[in-house]
Image: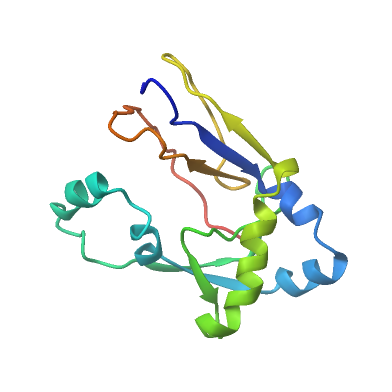
Length: 159
């Protein structure tokens, strides 16, 4: 662990969806988001870019479509399912047409009442469900290393 920093922010996407107005929920319920790995690449650290450049698929852009609002397969609850690190636009809309609504949603997702900050310590363990929680590691430990191990379980198709 670095001597300071390296926390992770978590945000509850159930609450992000449930606190939207009924009109906004109706608008979002039928929309499909277009997500791109190219958008995520711009947030990588220099070290990550150098490491990943050696991978054979490093230059390939992955684009995938997901519903803007997904229903969790186990809880049945609806959650906002757009991400500032990947979502570039709505299906059948340009990036310019999508920008204002996406900016609103990205800001809404980060409201303090939906978030918590996890301070890592040696031996810490955290579990979260990417279907209804977003995470954002804070890169504020410049000059130090943060070594972590991550296990990701196979997911399901968003619906």
